[in-house]
Image (cartoon, rainbow, N blue to C red):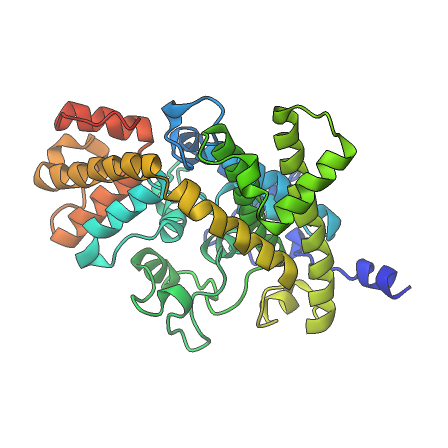
Length: 399
């Protein structure tokens, strides 16, 4: 009975009670506020560009490797599954998942490292901050305002993807404690308070943990496809070994391709089930029974159990040296960083080589550097390589 009562407790966000948009708009007669956010994100140019942005492998390395777009779609599917099971608002969870990688530059984390280096004198570059900038300023489809004018709940979910950014007094905390808040976030906060000291909604937390689940599952798949390691190697990771043993017991004659798919399927299922059970436990432990209670809980509610968190860490510790730091990946990403750095230097010297719509706000050094970073961050891998070849030459093939 206690478990059944707990399952009925809802800490979902209510679209009818949204804190609204920076620019007021009439309500839709057919869609909730959060559904409209999803639709705006799907129709954004930044969403389409994810198809040609690196996840781990550059887009032209193979048709079956994940891109930022397919990664985003997998995160979104998992987020909706979690939201449905926890009786959260599925549309808000979807919105937080759909937009979470809008700020990634070309070539994934390699591009981010390069832009961070180029902007050392101007506060650096952070892809979460760039996501906020994309959806509040750089996307411009509407006649009355810049950005997509998303709801408070979606914006806070995007900007707090990794949890609170400040303490209650406003001092930068966590990974931002040393360098301070990213410039884009601090500037936006002066006109729209996203309460950076608090945790985001349970739906946003579902989107964030779904990112981890998707990473683990599809990077194992892509790493095996790329021959970065073999199944016997990753079977040494306890959770993966248990799942493989179960597959072998259930399907002793299964062919290798189906074994890998079944591993991915079972891993995602095990992790989703863990998060659902742990979220219910955490809500009870923290006394959370409302959406606002989630924000004020002082800790994440939708998260892994300690045991699954350890398994997640073990998977990432396995993948880090064998996939993310594989010699071939490091060589390609080193070349990718060079492309981004050289493009930045070229535009800094010759801003007239940028398209006409990007040639304003270039009068002072900071404005010019940040404008160029916005332009490059929006590029796909393909466009960055084309522009480098056109303007600079000697462009590496990234293979």
